[in-house]
Length: 388
Ligand SMILES: *Cc1c(COP(=O)(O)O)cnc(C)c1O
Image (cartoon, rainbow, N blue to C red):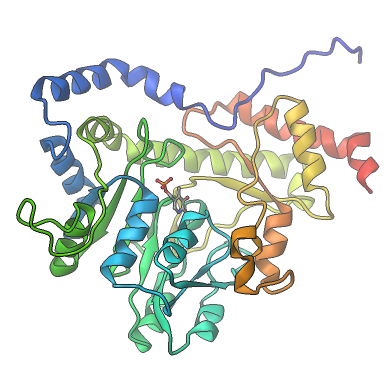
């Protein structure tokens, strides 16, 4: 083989343009309608999206807010979480799950994960409940629900509310019951990399309890009711009308997006098996009860080779990413909480070994082949042996 051997075209980790481009005229028309209406906040498009998302989540209420991070914060505020309280959550998640707790002066209590699914281990949850525990936040990581039947059972036996961090899991389900409908409240995000990605920030809360929904809505608008009379010290957190107009167009395609992601996951499995790589790297596992929406596709790279494989893939133009390299209990900002390396072994090994590959709906078969071929070339090359 000469050095001129054909290099495959680069594969981006995510290309939001591919999904948005074909809908561009629809977006522009919708944005124009909002501009003409002048109702940039609280427009009818927001109400429409709230209804659609609540329906899809099989909940009675949907409350738009500015981001998934704000949804978590608002849920905790509505539960009156305050200094001295403890909230249990996994350490293997995006920062916002924990920062919402810390922001209110409460203490995040980090628990370990099931190494097969990367989701909260219910037995670790049970062992961490104390007299100060005020809430539990399971995270449906990478698009697969945490075992909500078991988590709810534990929560109920201790009389504790459950806040689902479903930021990565819109459209997912556990035992055919949608993400966001298991807990007291579910938190969704429309950040551009999520399965329902907007063109900026956005989020939503879904819940069944009418009084709780009203409190969430109140807290998201300065605790104000009626105008200039403030019942609670709320925040300003709104989903704007233009964002909702865009999301109304995309949500009609959400099931197709999830189907494409799921097909890509199946295809990766076939490609990895065909090349015997599944005996070296560990493929993601779908639980029988889970309807997985594949927000991310993460493989586990054993024997300390993960970072070398990542460097090799990047050098080959293959997009890949690590979610998440540093577990939250090891973050500098949480150093005063007193965790140390070794506290949460499953979390720590996942953070050392996981590597995510492109899985967005518009990914092509040829691109998936390129990604898997690049991984194969790593294991056949000196790049692999050098790390040994
Ligand atoms: C994205 C994300 C959030 C935060 O959502 P934003 O809309 O970006 O604020 C919270 N939790 C998890 C697990 C996420 O992936």
